[in-house]
Length: 88
Image (tube, rainbow, N blue to C red; front, side):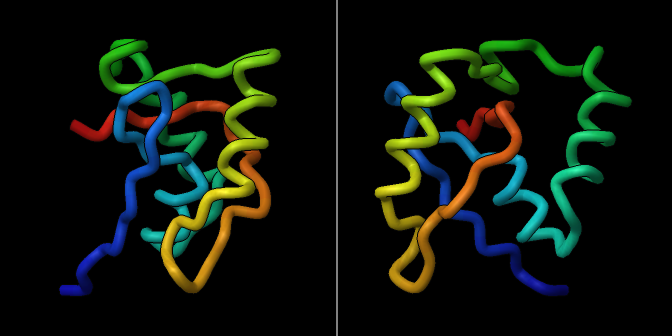
């Protein structure tokens, strides 16, 4: 079994993963992650299992993440999905 290499990022003191990170780790695209989330969203609690960013908060997050290194080899270039998954 292949080990997933997920590197949580911090948002307001919480360790989170973006849908883009999950898609990359699972070898799929954001659309599949988003569809799976939407089909099962009644199972998730906002603020516990995911965070929704909009407006200025989303712009600030994208700006900050574009300047931070996820790992030493790559940088986030774009964050398309505005949902963050909680990583406790």
